[in-house]
Image (tube, rainbow, N blue to C red):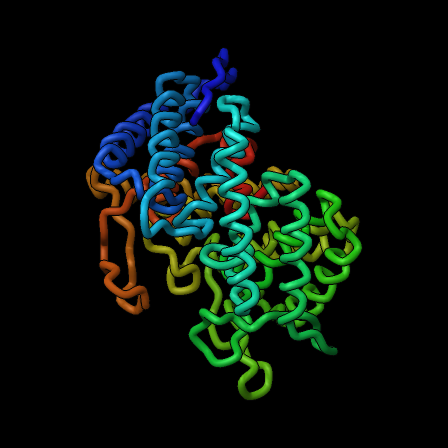
Length: 411
């Protein structure tokens, strides 16, 4: 049951891209109306569209859009009773639960404790099963579900997070090179993923949240520092290169096996943000300096053969890169980051206009994509990571400070 709390609305400045945002909202409302209630996920489901409409509504001070967001999340709650339900953070019940906690923080709903007790029981079992099999993945595995428990932050949830930290540490490798985990979903044998979405930066971000909430803070600090030893040892210092590979293979020695890019999911931008957050919380001034250097180095690269940018989406497109640079600006106050945010936002808007507007938004899915049955090429996409919803988040000038992006490990 969803209890809606009346609100006078947030006092926002007039948005430069108001017409575009309203058009996006209409497209997302039309698309989400055709979805089954069982599509509850954050990436391409009702939770993600609800979150996006809520942020647009706050940006435009539009109560009707906020009402539309709550209608979608109510449908998702109904969908949580479906058979063959998914549980992951990005596509399932965990993402819905996180979104409900976020809305409760914003004081637009009240949580149904009976409903949440059932969710906690189910998700704790699923999360530990993932971790006991060595699957820590932030989007699809154990730690992603852990983001809900961190958000929930009651006594039961804190105990689950503590247990997750123990499980996580138990299947790690820690030696003179530092601490790391082999990615069960990796494309290379014995691969260590260095991306935020599936690798070491995401693990550090999870542990930092636990640390800041007082959940085994000393252990979290120790493990984070051990991960940093490994991650920073793979930083390229040569001129003319991005700073980190996307992955390292330890099959035959320790060898970088995948080039980097500008993106949320992989690459220096999201790593820089995580390092800044760690530096602030753990009071590591040297790390702060390194994080800023890594971020500033990315501003030298605009060539698509280096950035691997081709569409306007959030995960690995112009929109997300613009958002990340704005996040770096907010964290550092450096105008260079603000200028680069505007540069990539213009690229995103120009591309969408060339497609015929937001109703024709397309994302580029490469043929090498290894997800079975997934369409490739220029594909119409509406979702938070690879579609129109993510573009909307990049356009919302205030969304970078609202905290919604905690679900993507950015706050």
